[in-house]
Length: 615
Ligand code: OXD
Ligand code: MN
Picture 1: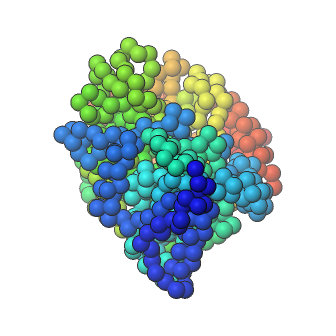
Picture 2: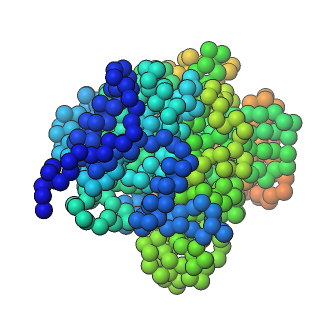
Picture 3: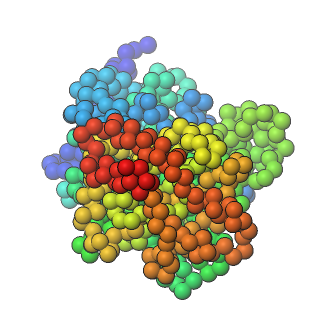
């Protein structure tokens, strides 16, 4: 066969913006540079139109990369099955390539920028041969909004293009912004599976070798080898969290792993709440909460990422920079998150869920009973006796936010919403009460910095091994976590003390000594929000405890549910001995940040020990 260089006369560069000089010409030059390196057969500038999206999806169906679901049950929807090895974010292959190692900090994998470029550039060389390279201009936040940021992703994955189209705002309006001189983030993605001439493609191309590399100093992301959303939709975790956290550090705002909701009380008064929980702790469920208490409503604004910026009014303003939900399917059902189930009625890309014989999808938890026959996520026949899950535990749905039946009508508003409360949560069987209020911003930052989940469900009074996930940002903070804590403290100083959001820690997962969950959770978590709102309004008092302000249990709205007083007492118990042990673990954790650990948070830890009666 002729060498590739002879065979491929010149790639088809497609319809692209024409500009002789200026920012658009710079963009075109950058795209040409990537194309010269990766050598795709074609370059396609994505305009974000419905016709383009339809054609892309049709092509993927023809190529066997998507299965079109039965439109009678799931119109406009598709199933993708990944390579069995490419099913999740690969934290061990995720790198922060800051100039200085100490700027990445102890919680990130640091690599020297020059070294990693020398490693990955050869991998990208020719990596798109036989494929189309798509150029996707996208905006995080409403196009042109004061809190919004833009970027461009080049990718050889049509699946990524379709997903970015749902998760962000894509199209020509972003090119206009670039033309106007707005800074943009460069993101490059290749599945790393070049095709030889005549070679048939596979359903999910990827590479065993994976690199997800962030260059915070030059605002770039380079991702190689994976098609999985968290590694391939670079606008999301890579840009909107890791890179944006660095931009926020430098500009005075916060990029956070938070859901965003509007809570409306029976009197019609609205409150805005952001909440950070580690992955798989029910963020999407809280984002789509249906209160079980009469008269209360929740409107969804976002389920995964929030950008928070101090306003000139002394309040903290928040937007959800995304335009869709990339949620975990298993466990999403009528009883746990009916709103999500309704959101998924159509126009959804499912990945690694099971296929029903009637051409619809299924996953564990969608219904109580599994269908008698399915095709599992790997494409194999499955019955309830198969002894393995039908859907992959990290199987996903990708769907437009606008499709959510309780989405706030102004979810897209460029200026965002002013926050009234921030919640931090984890999955804790012990110690952490159902809800506790921080005494002030610094104490709130202390709580955020100590967020953790138990690795194993522990019995009451014993402390399992804690997986620390400060601010639920452990895998997502693009810089030194010690500096990040300090930045949170600094942002607080820009807020008016009487207008700053109040901070609460919540824990839906506390267990009794008998191993039972003490709190019903899900829709009943609205009862905790009810208490928080009444605290904001100064309608109820609180009990000072060593760990913060606890509810008088009589103030909790428990109408319609049965929670024995014994369980309530356990839900709010503060055990001095195990809190002192927890304080020791927090100190060990803080020590890992060395001199970057803010003194104000060490002082909070000492104050906690003092309140626990330990001098
Ligand atoms: C996610 C995550 O995919 O947090 O949202 O892992
Ligand atoms: Mn997340």
